[in-house]
Structure formats: C-alpha cells, structure tokens
Length: 336
Ligand code: NAD
Image 1: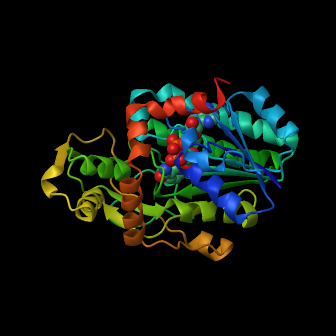
Image 2: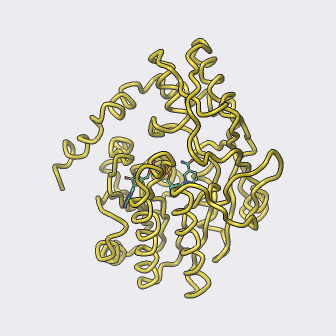
C-alpha cells in the first residue's frame, strides 16, 4: 500500500513515519511537507534512504502538485496531518492558519476524490470542541465550539472532511485527539518548553493561574490510534483519542522540575493567553470499543521518558531554538 502522509516532518508526523516503517512492512510512505518553521527534516535523519520512504517538499494547498503526486506515487491512502498547529501563533497571524488548515485540506480532499483513494484520514483535534467546565468529557457528539483561530481553522477542515464523506461518499475518517507529548516536539509547546528552560535554569513561564487542564496522551499511542482509524474506522465517522490523563498545567511544570531536580522557584506566572480554554478531557470509549485501540503509556512513564530524551538530545533542541535546524534540509539536499 502506498500512503501519502502530510506534515511528516513535524512532531506527530515524524513519529508516525517511524512507527509506520517499523510496524507496517508492506506500506510505502510518501511524506509531503512544506518545511515551515515547525517542520524539521532532521527529525527524520535516521530514515533518509529507507527503501519504503520518500520525502517531497511542497505545500498541501498546491492542488496541482498534490494531484500529480497522488498519481505518480499511485497513492492508495492519505493521512493528513499537515497544519499550522500553534494556538499562540494563530492569535498573531490567523491568515496562514486558514490558508493551510482550511484551503490546504480542501485542496487535498479534492485531489484525493479525483484520484479515488481508498482511505482519507483527517487528523483533527479535541480543541474543535471548545472548553469544558470542571466536569464532563468530550464525546464525538459534543457540538463543535472552537475558541481560537487555530481551533476554528481545524474545525473548518474537520467539517470539510466530513462533508466530502457525506456529499461525495468519500471514504473519509476523522480523528480528534487530546494534547500529545513525547520525543521531537517543537520546544514552543508546554512540555518541551518547560524541559528545555529547566535544563538551562531559565524561568518557566506559566499562563494565568496554571490551573488550566489538558488531557495528555503519548505521541506513540496517538500514532497507533491513527493507524487503527485508517485500517478499521468506518467511513464518515469520527473517533476521539485520549489517554485519561487530565492534569493541571502547573502540575506538569512541577513534574518536569522534580524529574530534573530543579527548584520550583523557576516557575514564573505570566499574563494569561486571550481566550484560553479552561479544560479539555476526552472520552475515547468509541475508539477503544470499535477500533480495539488502547493507550500503552501511563503519563508518569511517558513524561519520564520524554524528560530523559530531551536531556540526552540537547543538541537537537538547541539547533531548533537557535534556528540552525532550518538550514539542515538545504545542507543535506541542496535548495530544492
Ligand atoms: P507540527 O506543527 O509539529 O507539524 C506540522 C507539520 O506540517 C510541519 O512539519 C510543517 O512543516 C507541516 N506543514 C505546515 N503547513 C504545511 C503546508 N501548507 N503544506 C505542507 N506541510 C505543511 O504539528 P503536530 O503537533 O505534529 O500536529 C500534527 C497534526 O495533528 C496537526 O494537524 C494538528 O492539528 C493535529 N493534532 C495535534 C495535537 C498535538 O497535541 N500536537 C493534538 C491533536 C491533533
């Protein structure tokens, strides 16, 4: 099977490429990625030259390129992860979120429809549901109520994907997952930012009162869920993924400091993000029941593994923070 994976140089995408090459020996993976600031070709340095892997630099919003790629690579299935993904950036520059997340997804859906792919997996997020009060869980029936330009653009692409299933009978499956953590996450996101700052004895900035709640899942468990949804999900259906690991942000930050043996005095409270959602929590019963999926990592083991990885890969995240990683691709492949 030939799979087009978009956004494979990002955090989840690069973990997914590695997961697929290791666990699906009959699959060939074509990774289409624009290499924005969030895409790091170095994340996949270890699979360059793999006989079942090809990297293509390009924009999902380029309909001609995408249609051509689907045909020349004889793509059977699409796993669509490419997106602008950082909420804070969406508050500063919303337009690029609409361009990539909404227009890019529509271009890809259209090309995949014309090609007649056997499966189209759209990777959405629990942020499309908006914010929860102190109790309750997001189910697949929870009405969409996004708060940020990021989540609104993801809701737009999520609904477009479902519309292609309903209107054109396309074999689309949508997944909505909670907050991921793990190896290769860009150090602007909460957990890697806190680890990188703590290692360097820099202040750890915590929004508001630090009591916002996120439901954490290890990226490998999300990858296994995405493959389960692609293989066993019903067309036109939505599947939530989460690992029942709700934590207040401040507890995560304290956990990172404790794991690194650093003092709590590094915590610095900063002005809250505008429109900051208070709580997310996922009910993943449908994925467990219908896909036979279950998370393997406990949050405590996953966080310990992640802290160790960042401690041992300081050169990786220092190149990300300095911007040096942006030159990696040109150095390896020339400017093409
Ligand atoms: P990321 O920002 O680390 O990676 C995004 C990748 O997409 C990058 O490699 C980037 O270069 C690429 N990209 C951006 N615009 C592109 C374009 N126009 N054309 C081609 N490639 C482009 O993001 P991530 O955290 O790995 O998230 C991947 C997907 O999973 C996103 O769709 C996101 O909404 C979704 N998701 C993320 C989480 C999470 O916690 N990180 C949770 C649920 C869902």
